[in-house]
Image (cartoon, rainbow, N blue to C red):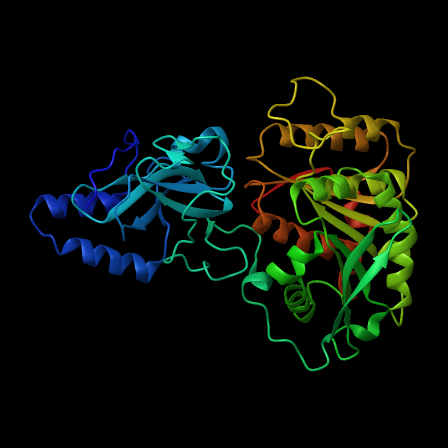
Length: 442
């Protein structure tokens, strides 16, 4: 085994690791293999109760050493990234192949994570984490092979307690015969750009298809939701279970790199007009029964969440509901990259838009993670301003971060409010008009 330099020990130790250490000290070397067999059977990370702290758990991330390394970094979304990276540095149990780090984390937390072993002199990783402060492009990027969800759409996934269900995404029901069709087409926008669009149309045999025209959901970053996360089978599963009514899904692809995505989704008013004036008419023309505006939903995350909110404020004629997840409150006109820090106490550009825009009837649902730093406070303040002006705004703060697994749960919950099944019509719209501000365990 490599005699690697390690970070300082944590104050809390997993009881299971403590028991392993004691057994090894007693001379039983076979305990290591038994430990890994047990971990494989129960799944990782290890989640254990913390005496005297019912709202927290001890969570231990593990890696079984398979090559000589200098260190191992557990990158846990908004838990051990950015300035919190030193918390994710694993330590090796001496003279074993067990690397671990134990953290105190809140019940209700949902987050994804990756494991990064690295060798001596690695240019990107060192004893305190990423040398540049950024977790992008780190070497030897691995999922956790013992995590029960590692092969799923979100990769290695931690859920403590019972956050809102992701069952439709992690294990969608088998599609029924005639469930629908998906097609791809190119849209030439009024801004002169060409956009790749994917469109799913449910079939007539889908449960609830006789209850009126399907709702219409437009998602930004469409290639991610269609290809990587499986939005079509996930929502088909939710429809089959009676959680939402039948829905057509349209995905608009974003730029292939950060700069292109910034140009498209950086509150680009010309792109907002493309959504309203070019995309929706083209999509409606392909639907046998186009829905009314009130049943048309726009959903975006991060920069896409910013664009969704700008659309609600400046083109209220287009969508009846917008779902904005972790909207990029740091953005201002002219930016080509995210700034390293946001000036404290300064009104965000998005807030300025919210207090100046004419009042309209678009239903706005904002979701943001409790671990998203200044963004959480920014969106609380934005929501308060919208509510005070009479907008139908709803804020949900979930236990998590800037994470597609959290956004998928928020997407399903938001769509259930915007397009409930016919058996539960009260969820739309009156039941949500007074929701104000909610905490959830997504």
